Image (cartoon, rainbow, N blue to C red):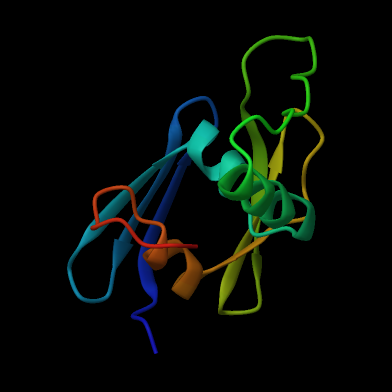
Length: 109
């Protein structure tokens, strides 16, 4: 099992910083978290893009840059983030967040 976070810091217009029990720190930009959402629709879109690089991406809603409106803990194993584009169905488990750490070596989510 992956180490749990000891500290979470969400800057709504910038990103999420996590300090882990093992002493490492991870930073996830807001746009990256949205793109890497573990929701079924985003997983499906990433799979389509791997198979066909000409996949049509959903349009971005008007209304300014993407931000996080807030986040809530899901039990003691995950975080749910509400984005300004209306997306809020992804549940980011600690294990999943560790697997998509932008600083870590490339891994497939």
